[in-house]
Amino acid sequence: MPNLRTPGPIPVPDDILEAMSLQMINHRGPEYKEMLNRTTEGIKRVFETTNDVYIMTASGSGAMEAAVVNTLSPGDKVVNVSVGVFGERFGEIAEIFGAEVIKLDYPYGTAVDVDKLRDTLKAHPDIKAVLVTHNETSTGVTNDLQAITAVAKGEFGKLILVDGISSVCSIPLSTDAWGCDVVATASQKGWMLPPGLAFISFSEEAWKAHAEATMPRFYFDMSAYKRYFEIGQPPYTPAISIMFALDLALHKIASEGMGTVFERHANMAHMTRDGVKKLGLSLFPQDESTASNTVTAVTVPEGVDASKLMNILRTEHEVVLSGGQKSLGGKIFRIGHLGYTTAEEIQEVLDALAIALPQVGFTTGAQA
Image (cartoon, rainbow, N blue to C red; front, side, top):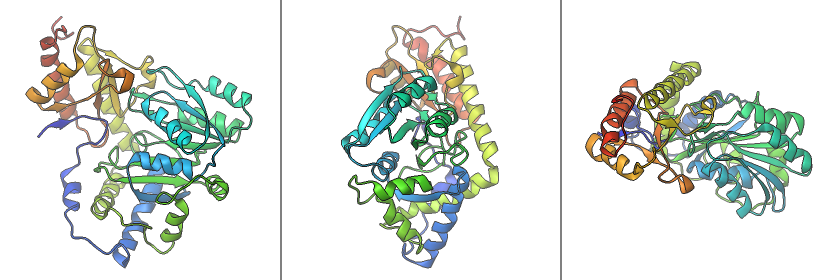
Protein backbone atom coordinates (compact mmCIF):
# COMPACT_ATOMS: atom_id res chain seq x y z
CA MET A 1 0.00 0.00 0.00
CA PRO A 2 1.46 3.42 -0.94
CA ASN A 3 2.63 5.71 1.83
CA LEU A 4 0.38 8.66 0.99
CA ARG A 5 2.10 11.77 2.31
CA THR A 6 0.17 14.55 0.60
CA PRO A 7 -1.32 17.40 2.67
CA GLY A 8 -4.77 15.97 1.99
CA PRO A 9 -6.33 13.63 1.30
CA ILE A 10 -4.66 11.59 4.00
CA PRO A 11 -4.61 7.88 4.83
CA VAL A 12 -7.73 6.93 6.79
CA PRO A 13 -7.46 4.49 9.74
CA ASP A 14 -8.95 1.06 9.05
CA ASP A 15 -11.70 1.26 11.68
CA ILE A 16 -12.91 4.59 10.26
CA LEU A 17 -12.93 3.11 6.75
CA GLU A 18 -14.98 0.18 8.08
CA ALA A 19 -17.51 2.58 9.61
CA MET A 20 -18.24 3.83 6.10
CA SER A 21 -19.52 0.38 5.10
CA LEU A 22 -22.58 0.66 7.34
CA GLN A 23 -25.96 0.49 5.63
CA MET A 24 -27.68 3.76 4.72
CA ILE A 25 -30.18 5.42 7.06
CA ASN A 26 -32.90 7.99 6.48
CA HIS A 27 -31.33 11.42 6.72
CA ARG A 28 -34.76 12.75 7.70
CA GLY A 29 -35.15 10.15 10.45
CA PRO A 30 -34.42 9.96 14.20
CA GLU A 31 -31.14 8.00 13.85
CA TYR A 32 -29.62 10.69 11.67
CA LYS A 33 -30.91 13.43 13.97
CA GLU A 34 -29.10 11.85 16.91
CA MET A 35 -25.89 11.50 14.90
CA LEU A 36 -26.13 15.07 13.58
CA ASN A 37 -26.54 16.49 17.08
CA ARG A 38 -23.75 14.31 18.47
CA THR A 39 -21.24 15.10 15.72
CA THR A 40 -22.04 18.82 15.77
CA GLU A 41 -21.27 18.97 19.48
CA GLY A 42 -18.04 17.07 18.87
CA ILE A 43 -17.00 19.49 16.15
CA LYS A 44 -17.72 22.44 18.44
CA ARG A 45 -15.33 21.03 21.01
CA VAL A 46 -12.58 20.75 18.40
CA PHE A 47 -13.29 24.30 17.18
CA GLU A 48 -13.29 25.52 20.79
CA THR A 49 -16.53 27.37 20.19
CA THR A 50 -20.05 27.81 21.49
CA ASN A 51 -21.00 29.40 18.18
CA ASP A 52 -23.22 27.69 15.64
CA VAL A 53 -21.43 24.99 13.64
CA TYR A 54 -22.75 23.31 10.51
CA ILE A 55 -21.75 20.25 8.50
CA MET A 56 -21.86 20.55 4.73
CA THR A 57 -21.36 17.99 2.00
CA ALA A 58 -18.64 19.88 0.15
CA SER A 59 -14.91 20.39 -0.12
CA GLY A 60 -13.02 22.98 1.89
CA SER A 61 -13.35 25.42 -0.99
CA GLY A 62 -17.11 25.12 -0.63
CA ALA A 63 -16.81 26.19 2.99
CA MET A 64 -14.63 29.14 1.93
CA GLU A 65 -17.30 30.18 -0.54
CA ALA A 66 -19.94 29.84 2.18
CA ALA A 67 -17.89 32.07 4.48
CA VAL A 68 -17.82 34.80 1.83
CA VAL A 69 -21.33 34.73 0.38
CA ASN A 70 -23.09 34.52 3.74
CA THR A 71 -21.44 37.58 5.25
CA LEU A 72 -20.69 39.99 2.40
CA SER A 73 -22.44 42.01 -0.29
CA PRO A 74 -21.20 43.05 -3.73
CA GLY A 75 -19.11 46.18 -3.31
CA ASP A 76 -18.05 45.45 0.26
CA LYS A 77 -14.39 46.23 0.82
CA VAL A 78 -12.33 43.40 2.31
CA VAL A 79 -8.64 42.78 2.84
CA ASN A 80 -7.39 39.35 1.81
CA VAL A 81 -4.26 38.40 3.71
CA SER A 82 -2.36 35.79 1.69
CA VAL A 83 0.92 33.90 1.96
CA GLY A 84 0.23 31.28 -0.70
CA VAL A 85 -2.04 29.65 -3.24
CA PHE A 86 -4.95 28.95 -0.91
CA GLY A 87 -4.85 32.42 0.58
CA GLU A 88 -5.08 33.75 -2.96
CA ARG A 89 -8.08 31.50 -3.60
CA PHE A 90 -9.96 33.07 -0.70
CA GLY A 91 -9.57 36.49 -2.31
CA GLU A 92 -10.53 35.15 -5.73
CA ILE A 93 -13.79 33.79 -4.33
CA ALA A 94 -14.63 37.16 -2.79
CA GLU A 95 -13.77 38.95 -6.04
CA ILE A 96 -15.92 36.66 -8.17
CA PHE A 97 -18.93 37.45 -6.00
CA GLY A 98 -18.36 41.18 -6.29
CA ALA A 99 -16.38 42.22 -3.23
CA GLU A 100 -13.74 44.93 -3.55
CA VAL A 101 -10.65 43.02 -2.50
CA ILE A 102 -7.53 44.69 -1.17
CA LYS A 103 -4.79 42.14 -1.70
CA LEU A 104 -2.23 41.99 1.07
CA ASP A 105 0.13 39.41 -0.40
CA TYR A 106 3.32 38.29 1.29
CA PRO A 107 6.19 36.45 -0.45
CA TYR A 108 5.82 32.69 -0.62
CA GLY A 109 7.68 31.12 2.28
CA THR A 110 6.91 33.97 4.69
CA ALA A 111 4.13 34.53 7.22
CA VAL A 112 1.82 37.50 7.71
CA ASP A 113 3.40 40.69 9.05
CA VAL A 114 0.71 42.04 11.37
CA ASP A 115 2.18 45.55 11.26
CA LYS A 116 1.45 45.74 7.53
CA LEU A 117 -2.06 44.47 8.21
CA ARG A 118 -2.51 47.18 10.83
CA ASP A 119 -1.31 49.83 8.36
CA THR A 120 -3.75 48.56 5.73
CA LEU A 121 -6.67 48.67 8.14
CA LYS A 122 -5.73 52.20 9.18
CA ALA A 123 -5.52 53.32 5.57
CA HIS A 124 -8.92 51.80 4.70
CA PRO A 125 -11.32 52.32 7.63
CA ASP A 126 -14.26 51.17 5.49
CA ILE A 127 -12.94 47.60 5.26
CA LYS A 128 -15.69 45.24 6.42
CA ALA A 129 -13.85 41.95 6.75
CA VAL A 130 -10.43 40.34 6.91
CA LEU A 131 -9.94 37.05 5.05
CA VAL A 132 -7.01 34.91 6.15
CA THR A 133 -5.71 31.38 5.70
CA HIS A 134 -4.41 30.08 9.01
CA ASN A 135 -2.21 27.29 7.69
CA GLU A 136 -0.94 27.54 4.10
CA THR A 137 -0.22 24.06 2.80
CA SER A 138 1.11 25.35 -0.53
CA THR A 139 4.14 26.85 1.22
CA GLY A 140 4.27 24.95 4.52
CA VAL A 141 3.74 28.11 6.58
CA THR A 142 1.45 28.67 9.57
CA ASN A 143 0.31 32.22 10.25
CA ASP A 144 0.02 33.58 13.78
CA LEU A 145 -3.76 33.73 13.67
CA GLN A 146 -4.08 34.87 17.27
CA ALA A 147 -1.89 37.91 16.53
CA ILE A 148 -3.79 38.61 13.31
CA THR A 149 -7.18 38.54 15.04
CA ALA A 150 -5.84 40.63 17.94
CA VAL A 151 -5.15 43.39 15.40
CA ALA A 152 -8.08 42.94 13.01
CA LYS A 153 -10.74 42.22 15.62
CA GLY A 154 -9.23 43.60 18.81
CA GLU A 155 -7.99 46.91 17.43
CA PHE A 156 -10.31 47.51 14.47
CA GLY A 157 -13.42 45.41 15.15
CA LYS A 158 -13.46 43.81 11.70
CA LEU A 159 -15.27 40.64 10.72
CA ILE A 160 -12.78 37.75 10.67
CA LEU A 161 -13.23 35.00 8.06
CA VAL A 162 -10.75 32.15 8.51
CA ASP A 163 -9.70 29.38 6.17
CA GLY A 164 -8.83 26.80 8.81
CA ILE A 165 -9.07 23.91 6.38
CA SER A 166 -5.67 22.41 7.15
CA SER A 167 -5.31 23.71 10.70
CA VAL A 168 -8.45 22.85 12.66
CA CYS A 169 -7.92 19.51 14.44
CA SER A 170 -4.17 19.63 13.70
CA ILE A 171 -2.91 22.99 14.99
CA PRO A 172 -4.41 24.95 17.91
CA LEU A 173 -7.17 27.32 16.82
CA SER A 174 -9.32 28.84 19.57
CA THR A 175 -12.32 30.12 17.62
CA ASP A 176 -14.05 32.03 20.41
CA ALA A 177 -11.03 33.13 22.44
CA TRP A 178 -9.36 34.59 19.34
CA GLY A 179 -12.50 36.28 18.03
CA CYS A 180 -12.90 34.36 14.76
CA ASP A 181 -16.32 35.02 13.25
CA VAL A 182 -16.32 32.32 10.59
CA VAL A 183 -13.97 29.34 10.51
CA ALA A 184 -14.05 26.87 7.61
CA THR A 185 -12.42 23.46 7.53
CA ALA A 186 -12.73 20.12 5.74
CA SER A 187 -12.72 16.41 6.51
CA GLN A 188 -9.71 15.22 4.51
CA LYS A 189 -7.13 16.94 6.71
CA GLY A 190 -6.52 16.42 10.43
CA TRP A 191 -9.88 14.77 11.03
CA MET A 192 -8.67 11.36 9.76
CA LEU A 193 -11.49 11.24 7.19
CA PRO A 194 -11.93 11.00 3.41
CA PRO A 195 -12.80 14.13 1.43
CA GLY A 196 -16.46 15.07 1.22
CA LEU A 197 -17.45 17.02 4.35
CA ALA A 198 -16.84 20.64 5.29
CA PHE A 199 -17.46 22.24 8.67
CA ILE A 200 -18.13 25.91 9.30
CA SER A 201 -18.68 27.99 12.44
CA PHE A 202 -20.74 31.18 12.62
CA SER A 203 -20.51 33.78 15.39
CA GLU A 204 -23.23 36.24 16.41
CA GLU A 205 -21.36 38.92 14.44
CA ALA A 206 -21.34 36.63 11.40
CA TRP A 207 -25.11 36.21 11.70
CA LYS A 208 -25.54 39.99 11.90
CA ALA A 209 -23.50 40.31 8.72
CA HIS A 210 -25.55 37.51 7.16
CA ALA A 211 -28.77 39.45 7.75
CA GLU A 212 -27.42 42.27 5.55
CA ALA A 213 -25.43 40.20 3.03
CA THR A 214 -26.77 40.14 -0.53
CA MET A 215 -24.27 37.94 -2.39
CA PRO A 216 -26.17 35.18 -4.25
CA ARG A 217 -26.30 31.85 -2.49
CA PHE A 218 -28.43 28.72 -2.52
CA TYR A 219 -26.66 25.47 -1.64
CA PHE A 220 -24.34 27.30 0.76
CA ASP A 221 -26.99 29.51 2.40
CA MET A 222 -26.32 29.17 6.12
CA SER A 223 -29.87 30.22 6.99
CA ALA A 224 -31.06 26.95 5.41
CA TYR A 225 -28.56 24.97 7.49
CA LYS A 226 -29.69 26.80 10.62
CA ARG A 227 -33.38 26.25 9.88
CA TYR A 228 -32.98 22.55 9.17
CA PHE A 229 -30.60 21.93 12.06
CA GLU A 230 -33.34 23.08 14.43
CA ILE A 231 -35.40 20.07 13.34
CA GLY A 232 -32.38 17.74 13.33
CA GLN A 233 -31.90 17.48 9.60
CA PRO A 234 -29.51 18.65 6.87
CA PRO A 235 -31.00 20.94 4.22
CA TYR A 236 -29.76 18.68 1.41
CA THR A 237 -28.81 15.03 1.04
CA PRO A 238 -25.66 14.47 3.11
CA ALA A 239 -22.71 12.14 2.59
CA ILE A 240 -24.11 9.59 5.02
CA SER A 241 -21.18 7.18 4.81
CA ILE A 242 -18.70 9.91 5.71
CA MET A 243 -21.01 11.01 8.54
CA PHE A 244 -20.66 7.50 10.01
CA ALA A 245 -16.89 7.91 9.72
CA LEU A 246 -17.02 11.37 11.32
CA ASP A 247 -18.98 9.98 14.26
CA LEU A 248 -16.24 7.45 14.98
CA ALA A 249 -13.38 9.87 14.27
CA LEU A 250 -14.77 12.39 16.76
CA HIS A 251 -15.02 9.65 19.39
CA LYS A 252 -11.37 8.73 18.78
CA ILE A 253 -10.30 12.40 18.89
CA ALA A 254 -12.16 12.98 22.16
CA SER A 255 -10.60 9.87 23.67
CA GLU A 256 -7.12 10.97 22.66
CA GLY A 257 -7.64 14.57 23.80
CA MET A 258 -6.97 17.65 21.70
CA GLY A 259 -3.74 18.42 23.55
CA THR A 260 -2.38 15.02 22.56
CA VAL A 261 -3.63 15.45 18.99
CA PHE A 262 -1.72 18.75 18.68
CA GLU A 263 1.37 17.23 20.31
CA ARG A 264 1.27 14.28 17.91
CA HIS A 265 1.18 16.62 14.92
CA ALA A 266 4.04 18.69 16.34
CA ASN A 267 6.16 15.59 16.97
CA MET A 268 5.69 14.31 13.41
CA ALA A 269 6.52 17.76 12.03
CA HIS A 270 9.72 18.03 14.07
CA MET A 271 10.78 14.55 12.98
CA THR A 272 10.17 15.41 9.33
CA ARG A 273 11.97 18.76 9.45
CA ASP A 274 14.94 17.33 11.33
CA GLY A 275 15.12 14.40 8.92
CA VAL A 276 15.16 16.42 5.72
CA LYS A 277 17.76 18.80 7.14
CA LYS A 278 20.01 15.87 8.05
CA LEU A 279 19.81 14.83 4.40
CA GLY A 280 21.23 18.24 3.48
CA LEU A 281 17.95 19.67 2.24
CA SER A 282 16.58 23.11 3.11
CA LEU A 283 13.12 23.99 4.38
CA PHE A 284 11.16 26.37 2.17
CA PRO A 285 9.73 28.58 4.98
CA GLN A 286 12.21 31.39 5.56
CA ASP A 287 11.65 31.29 9.32
CA GLU A 288 11.46 27.79 10.75
CA SER A 289 9.34 29.07 13.65
CA THR A 290 6.53 29.57 11.11
CA ALA A 291 6.90 26.07 9.59
CA SER A 292 3.64 24.14 9.54
CA ASN A 293 2.97 21.12 11.73
CA THR A 294 0.77 19.61 9.00
CA VAL A 295 3.06 19.73 5.96
CA THR A 296 6.77 20.25 5.46
CA ALA A 297 7.73 22.20 2.34
CA VAL A 298 11.26 21.44 1.12
CA THR A 299 13.26 23.46 -1.40
CA VAL A 300 14.29 21.39 -4.42
CA PRO A 301 18.12 21.51 -4.65
CA GLU A 302 19.75 23.24 -7.60
CA GLY A 303 19.94 20.95 -10.61
CA VAL A 304 17.42 18.41 -9.27
CA ASP A 305 14.36 17.55 -11.36
CA ALA A 306 11.53 17.53 -8.81
CA SER A 307 9.13 15.53 -10.98
CA LYS A 308 11.79 12.86 -11.58
CA LEU A 309 12.51 12.67 -7.85
CA MET A 310 8.85 12.23 -6.95
CA ASN A 311 8.35 9.69 -9.71
CA ILE A 312 11.20 7.57 -8.30
CA LEU A 313 9.72 7.85 -4.82
CA ARG A 314 6.31 6.80 -6.09
CA THR A 315 7.29 3.97 -8.44
CA GLU A 316 10.26 2.48 -6.59
CA HIS A 317 9.38 3.18 -2.95
CA GLU A 318 5.59 3.66 -2.98
CA VAL A 319 6.01 7.04 -1.27
CA VAL A 320 3.62 9.69 -2.61
CA LEU A 321 4.56 13.33 -2.03
CA SER A 322 3.14 16.59 -3.39
CA GLY A 323 4.96 19.00 -5.66
CA GLY A 324 4.82 22.78 -5.68
CA GLN A 325 1.78 24.66 -6.98
CA LYS A 326 1.62 27.47 -9.54
CA SER A 327 4.92 29.43 -9.50
CA LEU A 328 6.39 26.92 -7.01
CA GLY A 329 6.10 24.05 -9.51
CA GLY A 330 9.44 22.25 -9.66
CA LYS A 331 10.84 24.45 -6.87
CA ILE A 332 9.55 22.65 -3.80
CA PHE A 333 8.11 19.32 -2.75
CA ARG A 334 5.83 18.80 0.22
CA ILE A 335 5.56 16.03 2.80
CA GLY A 336 2.18 15.79 4.51
CA HIS A 337 2.01 14.60 8.12
CA LEU A 338 -1.49 15.51 9.23
CA GLY A 339 -4.18 13.19 10.42
CA TYR A 340 -2.99 9.98 12.04
CA THR A 341 0.64 9.76 10.93
CA THR A 342 3.18 7.45 12.57
CA ALA A 343 6.92 7.80 13.07
CA GLU A 344 7.38 4.66 10.97
CA GLU A 345 5.64 6.29 8.01
CA ILE A 346 7.80 9.40 8.25
CA GLN A 347 10.95 7.32 8.58
CA GLU A 348 9.96 5.42 5.45
CA VAL A 349 9.78 8.75 3.59
CA LEU A 350 13.18 9.84 4.86
CA ASP A 351 14.77 6.50 4.01
CA ALA A 352 13.30 6.64 0.51
CA LEU A 353 14.61 10.18 0.01
CA ALA A 354 18.08 9.08 1.12
CA ILE A 355 18.09 6.51 -1.70
CA ALA A 356 16.31 8.55 -4.37
CA LEU A 357 18.15 11.87 -4.04
CA PRO A 358 21.54 10.53 -5.26
CA GLN A 359 19.70 9.06 -8.25
CA VAL A 360 18.74 12.59 -9.32
CA GLY A 361 22.18 14.04 -8.69
CA PHE A 362 22.04 15.28 -5.10
CA THR A 363 24.60 14.15 -2.53
CA THR A 364 22.76 13.79 0.76
CA GLY A 365 24.09 14.75 4.15
CA ALA A 366 23.91 11.08 5.06
CA GLN A 367 26.53 10.36 2.37
CA ALA A 368 28.76 13.36 2.96
